[in-house]
Amino acid sequence: MKQFLSKFFDKTFWKFILVGIANTVFGYGISLLFLNVFHLGLWISSAADYVFGSILSYFLNKFFTFESKGNTKKTIIRFTINIVVCYVISLGIAQPLVEYILKSQTEFIRDNCALLVSKGLFIALNYVGQRFFVFKETENKDK
Image 1 (cartoon, rainbow, N blue to C red):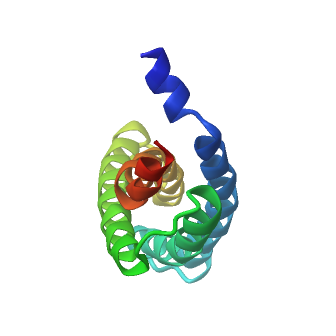
Image 2 (cartoon, one colour; image 1 turned 45 degrees about the vertical axis):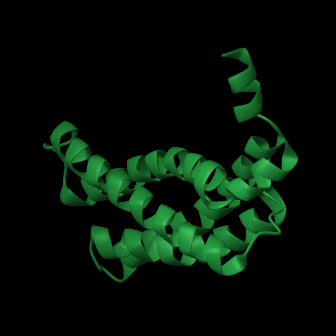
């Protein structure tokens, strides 16, 4: 178990966290803009976050975090699958959970909290997906 934890929380993990912080601020800002200024609803606003944020994330993680030299077409396909799966799971869990916990609050508060909870779930799922699915060839070359 100790070996797994040291492998999981290595330099790559911390680089992913650094990229994730920048990407989260960028994407969350977009989702708040779409939700609160353009009034486009929770799912469209969060989708905009993930579309724009994912473009930034792909390049930062490919070249900085995972230093991947792998097939770009292959990693883009895997990356897209990973993002879609993580997005649907995270918002699919966050929205009903926040609705239930904050049922007495306004829709504005519930939607904004759902975005935040979804973002946290997404980050955790996304790290696992990118490290062990999208950019896994980098891991195999390091061995």
